[in-house]
Length: 114
Length: 112
Image 1: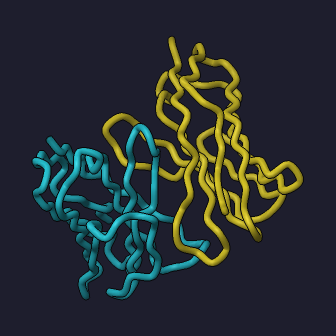
Image 2 (image 1 turned 30 degrees about the vertical axis):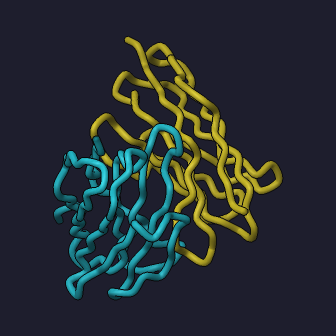
């Protein structure tokens, strides 16, 4: 069974631009979560989607948004990029919401903002 | 609020040495606890988990016991290998599901 895939793997943008990252969960998984990883702040939760609905949101500005499609694939968008948005963005999928459902992580998209 | 604190790295050990990475947490209720490992250039892999007090999670020679009285979930391995070199993250997830809350990560370097 294929794992979580994220595209693109690497991205370079300039300040003020916007970017869209994509995540394809493991087949059959319906929950997708996004995390931002930076050296200074570590791993921080962005949002979680289940059945095309945002179920949980972290403490990020409105420039960060996401969505989930009917096939459970998810995208996240960052508008008006800032230098501080440079990070590794990780997507994780699980069968469903809930404590006992293990989250499987993708390799991440490394975003560099110049 | 919920939080996880783990020992700072980097931790450098010789092959076959004993490993302990300390992790303590603050949480309301009864969270589930996890250790994830991140190898260079890769995403996170679940190493082990424990869902209630006194549970012991184990995998690939690594162990951690959920200690509610000390709010700890320390990672141990009796004999590390060079291939164990990675960054290790302790995390919790509350019993309503949803987000993982991670510690800052501890980099482990094992020398031959």
